[in-house]
Image 1 (cartoon, helix red, strand yellow):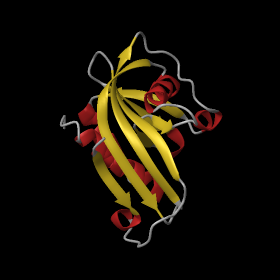
Image 2 (tube, helix red, strand yellow):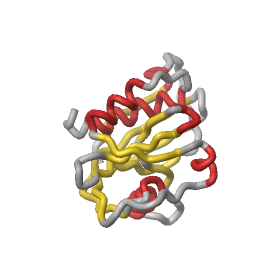
Image 3 (cartoon, one colour):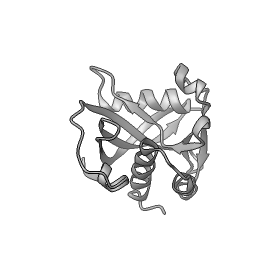
Length: 166
């Protein structure tokens, strides 16, 4: 899978150094509906917009993780269309390292209820359906003074702009 972006603290906040934390393996998805809109999560407590995705469970394939995350975070079953690329984040300041594998998918069947974890419910997580251009706008325009959120923002913009839709 092609590398979309490699982000380190030097890129985000100018600090040197790399974390040696265990790599978190995760998946992300750009999920299109029949109206060519994509699912974007809104995390209410931070007024943060981000693409759906999450960690890969032990013994779970990337494709199974994508389908599970789509169901949990958007309420949709999906068909995976193809690979988008992978992103790499290494933050010494947050002692966090992640490789995330991003996939393109489309909704199959009806949109349903979200199946969120307790912390996602408590943080006011919801899903919105936006054009790619609208998604790039709401993600990129959100001011961020949090390093972790800035990583998410830069990562998601790289994923969306790699689609060539903007």
